[in-house]
Length: 210
Image (tube, one colour):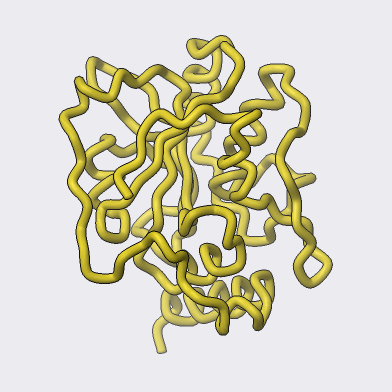
């Protein structure tokens, strides 16, 4: 077994512990069809803004477990910030090396981010308050330049490593926002509950294709 396989196995075990055995037996989110791919509209029609958040459902076992463990998250399991950079919409997000060729924070075109979603299903939301999107973009690009690794320990007290929703939480807090994210303790570890993104007092729906 290769080192990459061993790493993947270790992360799988960690996620299973974090999500709990109940995740395996829970049903799929009702509004996600198993056989249909969703269309994605022309970007110009979406009226996106810098700092919008995009959510997707990944194709890995990790995404499956995360989505099942947070049933109020509409099947979403991954997130990132949208910014217009060099005239093109990009997504800044973070993924573990066990699931990718590189570890941690990275930047992808919006189209690439959507193509990596299960059945192309995505949701775009906007924070209810106007923040300094230029400052948010600069901070995300600085973290990208620093090559901040993925937080496999799910430690919210250590900002030297960040998992996907932890990255968003970190940037919002740097903007002076309170820690509004819902938490859920799993095996004694506090993890960010994706249901936070569907709290309409915090986030305004912009677009979803499911």
